[in-house]
Image (cartoon, rainbow, N blue to C red; front, side, top):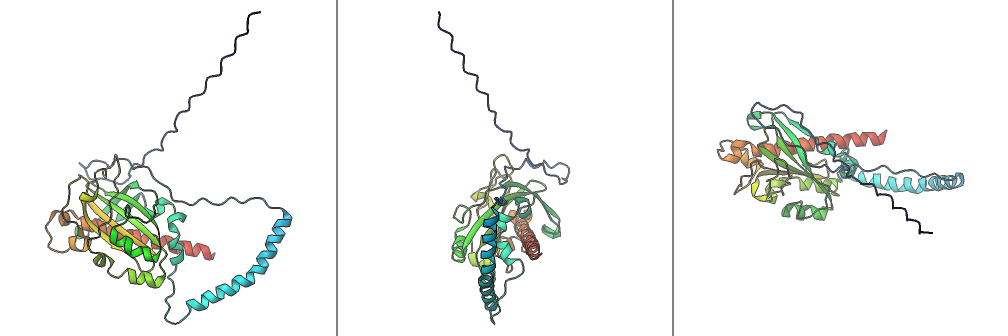
Length: 304
């Protein structure tokens, strides 16, 4: 008998890559004649995943309950010691939401920390309104020279630098770009108050790094394009907020200026006239307010 033909192996199905999520389209209004901001670069979500509970046997659950009851006495004694220590004369108490703010880098969604659109009424030159649109978000990063200016890194490392989050925004005309950063630390309330006193002036020409974004108006935003910056450490949050602004057309700036100098009365240079100092300082102030609101809400939720 002739040998039977070996059946052909079934064709392996072709696996097609999953389509990328739809790009974000800004929803704010624009003045006639201005081009629209390009789509947002891919976003890294920083929300922590909730743990999944496993099923336990009745006997194991009872044992855990007994251990918990026995442990309450020890825990209560430890907490009493903490409360007494916090009540010592001369030791500053933590502001409401301070501890919760320390964990926001992995507990809060990226859209809460860096809103897709951010309103800045009165934030521009002459109290003009500003609207900023997020175009780039970077993954959370360890504290390093790649994401922090040298002086700021040296300042926060002894306090326990936890994590750095960064994003880049553009204004409603897509003519300026601003990279903002949130530097989360383990600083206690006393250290944070000391840190925040005149931080930008103490750091000198410590300009934060820019965060560019391919296929966005920030594609050419690099070190040579940084024009103005601001750095702030609010006394009631264990966070340092940074911002650095520049022109979206890629023009270089020989001498970047801190925002307080760029917004000084009577300045006629291009950086001052374009409002880049106002952009840096204005967006910093609004991110601080958002952090404060989010931390306070988290603290209230914990007490319920």
